[in-house]
Image (cartoon, rainbow, N blue to C red):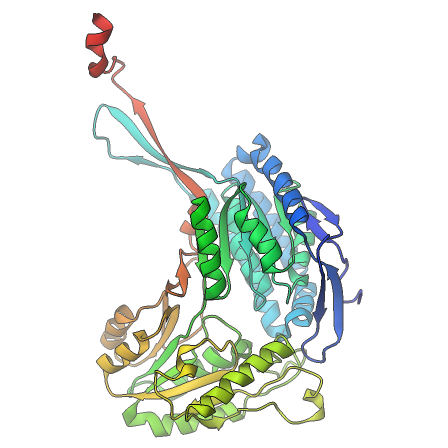
Length: 498
């Protein structure tokens, strides 16, 4: 194991560092294929142990009855730990995923911000007195679910982990995280921070391993009361079926094929920059990537020329190079899948206007690099415009007017995000409300706030994360009725007086 990358080959199970009993997991650096670490993954028995410890911790009155402001202190300490270790976390995440250091540092600081926001939101959450309908007092209160689980993706692990762990703990639960086998190391770094922050043992575990082994055991375990999953739609459907059998609530943040819409009155510099960032940042490995670009026909040729020229100037390079904009893809197998999407697009009549191949040069040979790619001459029914590529590949299509672009944008099984570029605020409002997507950006793209709920429509998922209500999503609502009359219920009086 490369000690410079990973401090341990053990898993954090029920508050202890233990060797996993599952299959080995290799983490490799996408820039050159070198080995980062070998981790012994989790087994179903490891899941059972983590859940058993989590049950004990979640039901301990010292945690369950802890006042909100006291529970918030734990979240603040975790946030402090992430910030202190941000350089270390970003280095590990870049080695694990191939992302640039600039992006992974931003993700680490975002995770710290998530814990801070949830701590603040926790201290200001209120139960409510509801309007009385009789001589009684009615209340609505929220209580922890107990033991919960989060299943996170490989593309932004520290931020995804935080968006599940922070609200789950704020709500008073225990949580078991299953990170992707493709990026197992960052969640272990988070476990180290959480341990040092003094969170009671058992409230947090992280169990990297195969979804069919660790994920299935978590979602079917009778003690798990909620699962939050971020990943592919196919897996999300599988988890939803398992949850239905248990009558268990789930949050599912799934795939996307998000449109970016450029109207003829848009600022061309703003629109071009937004499109480039929306699809090619993170090497396109983002569920919200703006992978379908609709440009109004009157400006189509001119805008496309500007976009292609800018795309060809994007810097493809090593994740540790500060000048890099497009880093390697996560794994050779994933690059093969991206290349297959481009091959099929050509087969369907698509014209490659930029990219469409691996970059040339010795510095790229050992890594999983792929050039930012733009493909035209397809219609919205083509496979490239229907399927999620999860790579730096953009399909470009013309449109005529509002009704045309709304119809084409919504003609997708997905509904995660959308970008609209226009100088007309009335048009922006109309189109934003008509688009079937959970998030719509206007004259920007991929901007996020932990204070604003996030989720998808249609095959892009169920439920919402983030925001103040993000904590409530990890709680059970309960109604309380307080009698104010003090008299026996009249229905029973005749029998009692007989």
